[in-house]
Amino acid sequence: MDAEGLALLLPPVTLAALVDSWLREDCPGLNYAALVSGAGPSQAVLWAKSPGVLAGRPFFDAIFTQLNCQVSWFLPEGSKLVPVARVAEVRGPAHCLLLGERVALNMLARCSGIASAAAAAVEATRGAGWTGHVAGTRKTTPGFRLVEKYGLLVGGAASHRYDLGGLVMVKDNHVVAAGGVEKAVRAARQAADFALKVEVECGSLQEAVQAAEAGADLVLLDNFKPEELHPTAAALKTQFPSVAVEASGGITLDNLPQFCGPHIDVISMGMLTQAAPALDFSLKLFAEEVAPVPKTRWS
Figure 1 (cartoon, rainbow, N blue to C red):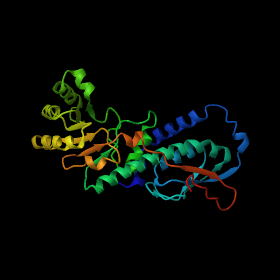
Figure 2: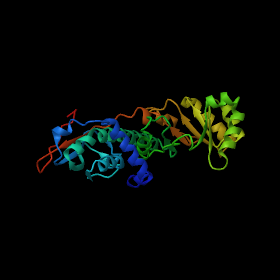
Figure 3: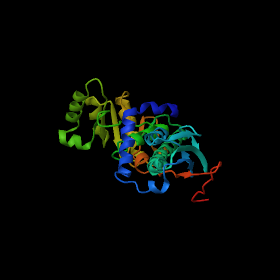
Figure 4: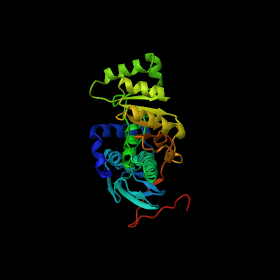
């Protein structure tokens, strides 16, 4: 998928409302620093000071559009960053430019970090000869999910379900509440009707078979060790070849190749959104014709 085209997934009204909430959070009242910077025309360069994948341009644009500033990009979405890289230039009233600075950098650092982790995960699976789907999870930051799911896509991973309405996921607690796997899946199947798929979290081959017999479209083998995962998936596929198998739980970039196998269709990783390190960006104002290059922390 072309990373540049992913911006079309973001509804303009939703995007505008989201960045408005961020800016209001950072400055809900008087902006005393505006008296220091003034309202004169100014310009700044966005620098990338750590390696990774650039992600978050639509959100960055929306932040500065709301503040009457203009952004000119030098690198496309999804670019591999080699520090120190000149990424973009922002022009506008000084007080507006500085009002958006921290919000824009925070967003870009997190979004690019997630895209970088996702890209690393996809690369690791391809290196292992596996062609299934690397996916995120619903383990996202409240209020920041749209950015994090978007970052996954820029990095080449699947976003998984966006919210509770995107897939009927029957987890262990649902099974307990319903009184068993079969009852839970039947209820989920009725709720899903023809429009949604049903996925069931299972802790054993027996549960997986029960879920498949009851009509599950996907089976999530959760917290299986690799030596248990692959035989279980193979046995399930032998009986139910059309049921997709997802592996999840305890999977990191280091052990990811161990979970790749011919009977695994999806590998989901909560760490892509929960533990991805943020990239380092800075926005530097300049008055000269040539913007000064910032130093990196580790140079």
